[in-house]
Image (tube, rainbow, N blue to C red; front, side, top):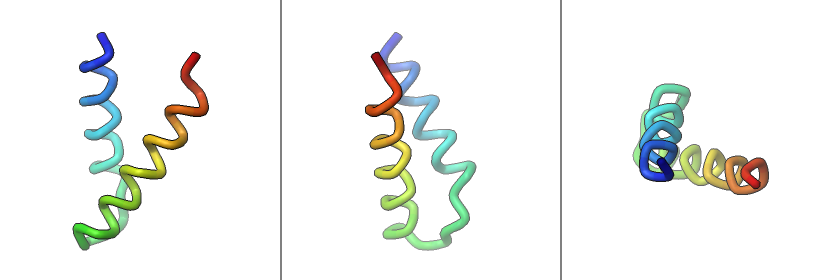
Length: 41
């Protein structure tokens, strides 16, 4: 279940990213991970 959530979040981050560089993509994934940590029980 946790693995599915992680995969889903990574896919969402890659789809929603507006950056065209690897560094920008990494920052977006990091932001989404921080948001997820703060909203999960």
